[in-house]
Image (tube, rainbow, N blue to C red; front, side, top):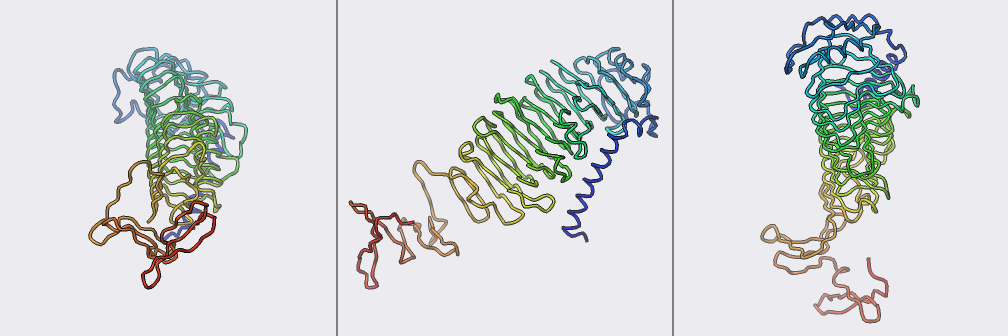
Length: 455
């Protein structure tokens, strides 16, 4: 059996190994892939449906050994027909640029770690503008220059990435050299982008988006300084993330944010998502500037070193079934909410690793909070209707901290005080407070409470 401490250290060990492997790859450059010998040889990708002709880049002169410049050969394969598919057999394809692609083209390989495109330039490798339904399948993209961007989609619609690995050079050891690297940039109202079973690792920013209606699922973002950056401050940036992981090591310089929304934005939703390894896991909105029109998290696990979630500016945040945890045995602030810019929201069944639920003092008064055995509603404006659950059951109860009933409204509407020191308090015309008291023989009298309102 493996106890919790063993599992914790085993997880940290896996992350350290990942960081070490990537750092070694960055340091050695092409040394590990110079000969292109992967032990895999195939004429066409197996079990992958494509539309139109399948064009093998090696038939156009590509070598795939990590040394030869395969830019021209890939360009010829792309230009030789459309829509079709361009196939990159297992190998490392060193390029200096990427060709213009027609709509509906597919770029397919043998696997994210087998068919690798290597780019050492300082600009954007794959830049698509106004494109529709281009897809990338089972291939990898590695950019090595500290200022490079792997892919940018500008004004594109319904493009798909499946089984794609996108890798940069950022680690805690290389910080801050690669903070300018970007993995995928979504701009110009790009929509319908689907990232499925993808890995986006080791960038200054893994995904940068100023667009809405884009989707990430069954994917992993690892060891990015910022995993996803929603930016633009123009009510557009938004994304739906499901069944995915954001992970990093616990180095101080490795990951600052897994998710950062830095101004006015659109809808952000996270469902079944795991976060660990960042200084601050999610930072949503910017106080006094703007934030998402909606923000929601359902069935998520959030761990961090300093703070798990900070809601600085957000409209209608919704948190349900979220568990808060720590990284590296620290005790992070689990949830911080700016009452001025996040006055209203909903929290349901939030679980703390240090207690059963999040303290009620964390939530502004306008929030609806349902915890374990407690409910803290927002102020009610209008008629409040309550009903007892059955014969003899109270419609409303006021309880003390030990669970004892102090006062109640019975199911027939009768008000009842079970505490002789409670009862009805009235204020006189001069500002004094008086409690109505019933004596043991049933007579009514009053006790003066002074001029300070009782609490």
